[in-house]
Each structure stands twice: as C-alpha cells, then as structure tokens.
Image (cartoon, rainbow, N blue to C red; front, side, top):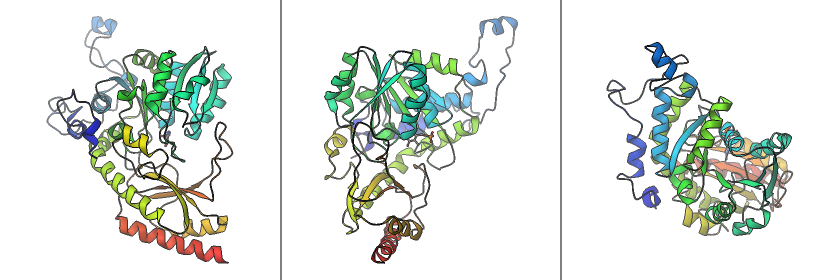
Length: 400
Ligand SMILES: *Cc1c(COP(=O)(O)O)cnc(C)c1O
C-alpha cells in the first residue's frame, strides 16, 4: 500500500510532495532551501501605532517565529484539509497534557483507553484528579460499546491506536461517532502511525497529537510535541496554549522540520523492515506471540487495514515462559538493538515491559516475558543475526 492511498483527495498533490514542499517560503528564506533558526524573544515594532495595535507578522517569540511558522505550515499540510492549526510543545507529553487541559475543566469527566502511554495515565491520575477532573479507563477494543461509559459530564475521549506497548487496535471512527453524538471531543495520540499512516483528523478525531520526539524528529536528538486540531477544537486549543505559555525551542523546531522532510522514506523502510522482522520472529521457537497489527494473525489486523496506510517500526513480542536471567542474557547479547526508552529514531531498540500493575479496565497476562522492539534503518539481515545471537544466549541461560 502506498501512504498516499487514503490521503485527502481534495489536495492537488500527493502527501509525499506536500512533506517536501510545504512551509517553504524561498523568497523569505533568501533562496535557501531551509529556513534560518530564528532565536528570538523581542520583536521590534516600527512605530508606536504598530506597537499599540500589535501589528506585524510576528509579535513575540513565544507566539511564533519564522522557523515555527515554517514548521506549522508543513505540519498543517501533512495533517490535511480538516486541520485548522497546529500548536507546538516542548515534548510529546507536554502536547498531550496541554491538549487535555485545553478541553477539560473542573467537574468534567474524561475517558481514556486502557493502553494509553503510561505518563498520560499518570497525568490524569496525578494532576487532573487534583483539579476535579475524573478519568475512567476503557477497554481499547470496546468500539461503539464506549457509549456505556458516558456520563452527563463526559467532555473528552483520548485514544491511542495501537497502544504503544501492547498494540491493541481501537476502532477510532466508531468511538468518535459515539463521542460526537454526546458532545465530547476526541483526542488521538497518533505517535505510532504519524499523520502519514493514520489520517486522524479525517477519521473523526478532533485533536491529533504527535510525540514528534519519535518519527517526526526521527534521529533521537530532540524532545518535541505537536497538537493539530480541527476547526471545532482549534480556538479553544490555541487560547489555552497561549494561557499556559507553551512553546518550543528554536533548534528543536528546526530539527523537527528537517526530520519531517524525510518522514515518508524513513517510514516506508520502518514499515517494510518492521513487518519482515515481525514475520521472522513469529517463526522463532522462543516466541509465543508477535503483537504487530500488520500481521494477519493480529486481532486488530482488520481495523489496521481499514484505517491505516502503513505500520511503523514499533511492535512487541511475548516470549515463551523463561526466567528473567534468560531474558537478561538476550538483552545483554544483542548489540544492534540498544536498550533505552523512546523510539522513532534511525536505530533499533529493545526494552522489556510489563503493564500488568497499572491496567485497570483490562488484564495484561501474557504467556511469558514481553519485549518491545523498534526496528531501525539498519540492514534487516544484520538485525536478524543480532536477535539470533540473543536467542542463543537466552536458550543457553534457560538450560542452566
Ligand atoms: C514517547 C511518547 C509520548 C511522549 O513523548 P515525549 O516526547 O517523550 O514526551 C507520548 N505518547 C506516546 C505514544 C509515546 O510513545
């Protein structure tokens, strides 16, 4: 499947073209392909009258610079015709918390899918609760059954598909339909697929969030978040972004824009290599289950095929039961798979995970230890050889 298959038909150019051409004002950039990194707080006004009227393209650094404008224009073109605006945040988590604070107030009720990014849950439980906002977690597979969780004060639903550790696929259009009937907004943490592989705003989502730290940056060298909203959600979002003083640093803005230019080719590789590795792992005797929605065997495969244009390089495996020492032997034996949090860069990663202790609406009870893998841009044969060495070490430790 090509990423452009489900992109907006009203746009004159393919999405890959928009990724390359949007947000480039060559005249303002004195002919250079990329915009300068504008470091700025103060913007000088030419006259007292201009100052009083806040007249001019830019008013103050926190509200935008030529560099942030270039990135916002490019992101808007990527998110598609439903997008009314994009706000920038200093991290993916800040993008999520800013979006939630913008749509909720004391006394409101929030619905969050049970497989959401854990720090998102921590914010709901540790921060929103203190300000009188109640959160209910729901089974990501609930679909239209989410109606049963709505209360008179339910104002928003947060989805994340697939969940970034366990990869359950929520039916976002079905959930959005119920939410809109009940006057609630839908927020989507769309970090896994990016707007290239999942057209959130075209599938009923009101606010589409990216941890741009991951694939948009793409090089493991920035912390960054983006919040794209449709016309219904944008006025409230941008007002609150300004009230909160949320903005992003100039170097990170520049690097996010640079990453965006190559997103299509990087993701195409992550998609192919990730699926190839998932298929290879599914044949390994040490592996009980591969959690990748692009595999025909995955319970969410039909939804993924219907709603997504591709897969990124992140998925998980469940090992057959072995000791922690055996898992550690694998982790210590691999060398191309680095151990570390985050993902979406050019490099492969592996981490063990266990979300049993904090799921509340569903039960996480895998057959054995679970590992999350990020398949980077290395040669797939080298990655297979590296993991094969890891499995040898696991087996040796298991026999002891
Ligand atoms: C990493 C991640 C975040 C948070 O992004 P940061 O930039 O690390 O704050 C949010 N959601 C998902 C799904 C993520 O993977």
